[in-house]
Length: 200
Image (cartoon, rainbow, N blue to C red):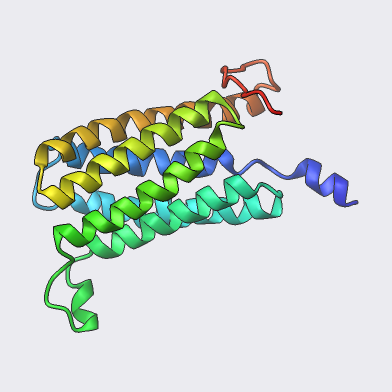
């Protein structure tokens, strides 16, 4: 009976990747400077809470039940990342804790550097999965590193380049998500290549 339930369980990967991709893309567009209106950041907050955050966190929990340690760790962690990022962007949130303003650029840089280190670990792990995921995690590592350095040094140029790399990261994530969705709905007739990596 357990085997039947496992066989009928849907793959949460495309959901997690799609939530990650759209939220990353929109924030990256803000970082590049293509969305610069006073209220434009609210679009990122909404996505970060519900799609990049909650939906991705749920995908991570479902990956735990599927026995996928890599997927569970990645989706749960980045879901939590987006929820924490939304908290940093919500005006006045810090006041509830006795703070008069948000974190400094240096603090944000340290925060992003920590995520770069974590992403680097996952990038190494992705080398045993497929080329599509390798592209996602290597690009994401570069994105976090550029954004961290931009925040730590006050370099707006680095932040813009990080935004462009973030857009490429989102496109790679959408591609891997599309491979999962289209392969499922077509019964395997639509097979976008993901280039499986050799396993020892």
